[in-house]
Image (tube, rainbow, N blue to C red; front, side, top):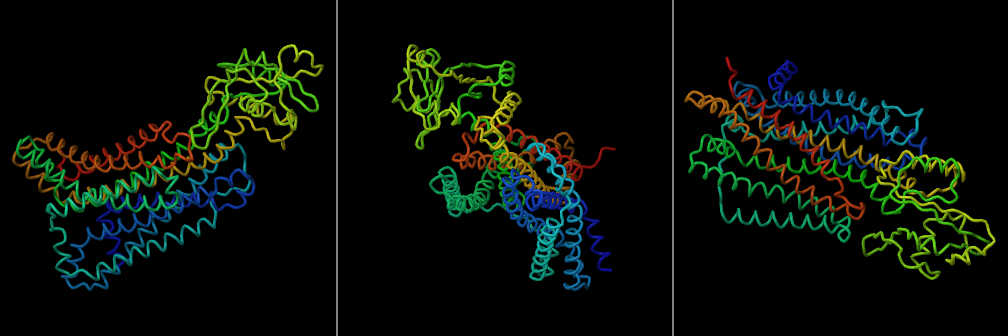
Length: 597
């Protein structure tokens, strides 16, 4: 009987539970996928490159777990608040709290079981797709990789089973501490904006101070280090909640007062809608802002690490091709490539010395890169005449000529006559710079393979492409983690926002019906809904974006330029956020407005 009541209650609130289910399914599936990629020991041992990104997926699992705990507690608590009046009615009809508690427990565990089953199935599919994509990116094939991996399955089931049990117990505790009268009248309580100037001013100043401390900790992360991350986490979180609790009600109140004076169409009604229960709305929007920051931040950081590969390669060497005595096969590849500039320098070696022709170097001065711990890396052209005692010219030779040629030899720059008198074998050093490194990866990869074949697979060929390819191994794992973490956080964000908007829509039906009865056109009502939803989406979107824009500075010591192509994740977020906005508007309209006959 209790099971039947619980299932009937779920059916009644199916739309609300589907919103919760989507968020949980995404969290479970991505958590399982991360654990499969991180724990699959035979897969990791089969290729050493995978072990370089294994910890990335472990870190993603931990972060996702923390946010999922907060989301699950919030979502189940919110669903409990929607059911309070229903539970109150049961109790007035004679039902005992113990029976009601058991119904709630069954509902929570049933939703948990459904989301766990669907999430594990979807997670297995994701693990298969992402695992194959990762292997394709790293260019190897695994015979041991298993998308259905039992250790990951056990970890996922245990973690989420405990989480759902805690959520159920938390709601039972809440129910045991609420009176029947409060349960019955829970939905009739409206929150008004009560502006106490002293308290508002204090909280507003405190929120700005906390946000400023958090931003400083992220910007100066090289000084604050690990402590800065902890400080930023707490100060920005609390600062955001205080910011929304103080500034949002004030802004809405001012906008409402302004529109009342103007009496412009339905704007005053729109702002009155926002004013209704503003305290709860502020808390939800603050939560949404933090989830946006985490979601967009995860995507932005993932893309930043991927894009950093090109910048890191450019920082390492100004030239894309540097070859000593290129073979026929290498010359063939070189001839197929376009270069902004390319030169062939000549040098000779004996047992003690390596000789370079000064005249060639003066006619075609090469580019070189200077590295400094205190200043940014600089690329400049060696225009001065080569001198044997010049560190810049010696560095150029050491970075360009393979160690097999230099060894312990002394570097000398001699004129034409002295170079010609050296009765030694003449060697060629080819250097070239392509117009676009990323568009030239195929021929650069071919040259790198030819060099490995030439010097042996075990030889360390430190070409610009080799360094770039090695970095991409780590970057590929980071971009996968960033994308899926970001998608999970944004799904939770949408669920949280939809909970607040759609579950309160039934209370708004009467207000919209009243406006329609007094002759307000449907077009104006739709515009009012669109504007109200736009403002609800706008506030957390702006704050979340500011958090991310400043937070990217935190990765400045790891990345050459954390803002390189930053517009890509921003546009991606805006597209996802826009889709959520239009879906929410459509769902809200379908609830509060009668269908046209």
